[in-house]
Length: 103
Length: 424
Image (tube, rainbow over the protein chains, first blue to last red):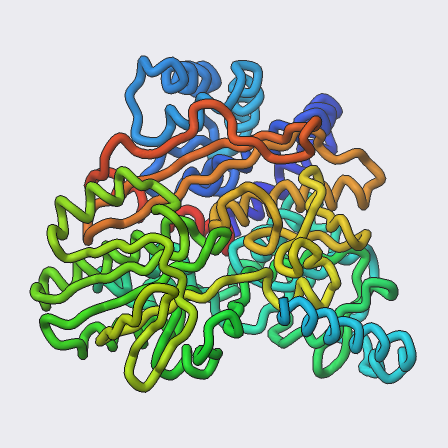
């Protein structure tokens, strides 16, 4: 219920603010990319437990973590393998998408 | 080959019936009055349920979604081997479809009897559903006729494959509980491709985990039709040797040709094997609905699709996702959800007259529980390759360095999160 409510609000805001609408249109690729994270991190980054909540995560923190997973600077069980599959530009797109999600 | 011919005849017969007597074939009325654009999805497993939710969510609930599913409840195949090990019950893996209804998805519990790709209708016993686009997500069916002496009834009654989580999983667990100490559990693995590549080897671990505790003199015998362990080989071999020494015996190139249910004996090309508990996993093909839709064109078993949209290469406006797809991709629940999301996005864009995402990527993370507490995984990102028109594994994918309790915990959280993403 809460998620749906938030979704309605997000859509309403999108209608009122043209900038928001334009961004939402451009970002369908980012949205699709981010959907790959949902199996382990929850729909739109709302983790049901055990993995970090990505919804509302600070962009710099997201991008920094992904780059560290990719380089191996930050040890991981699974994330290094996923991070290596994406470009730095895609980290930015993902970061933007998740930062815009309400926690 | 006989299967292909038979399916072809069945299909042809259905086609003739539809062509000759359209008013009879689709005499039933429209089950749900169609107002706007409608997607009908057949199959409410990982793939179908995800597609249903994401089409609603990403279209701002504008596209009508009707999900046709034969079962009243969703039972997760991933992690169902732990029912055999005793860590979970089948109830722990069972969910209802209530969460999907909250998205405005219309659920129809019933059996599809035919699909008319010309008139764009799905036929059920009590009427039909018209569609603008159809998603076929039927999972797998079993090719029982490849193994003499085995059929669906024998599997239900005494030689369960338990390769769809449910009653057969429970039966197999009961058979293990009744097995005497010192008995032999024999399982067979079909030639790839089959659903869940590491699943059979995980099952051997789960059965051994139970036997080690309760019946330590018993044996697990794996008869693999493949020339070698098809997934996570090093990790599984280590788990077998270190956790269950002298308990698991692995025989490659051992396709089961014949089953004698009464004596619990299987025949391979080389030997007869008698067991106390017999778990024969037959070869698989796309679920029957794929053949009804006329889209199972690859060897009469699997469905060729465009990986930008998952639209069938045979029929327009019919999309196929999940295990039924012909691809060099693992047939896993997670993979089905990944394909479902690409398909959902593409369908929305196509219905809005837009071009679908030309650079899709999908992921798969697949944990195997090798004991009550330890797991290991394989994880990959797959990216669309325009030149090859295929999904290709990106750099960096691979398996765990070693099995661990940390990954066992992650596996449990994976299940919780993915079920929430699919059904919540």
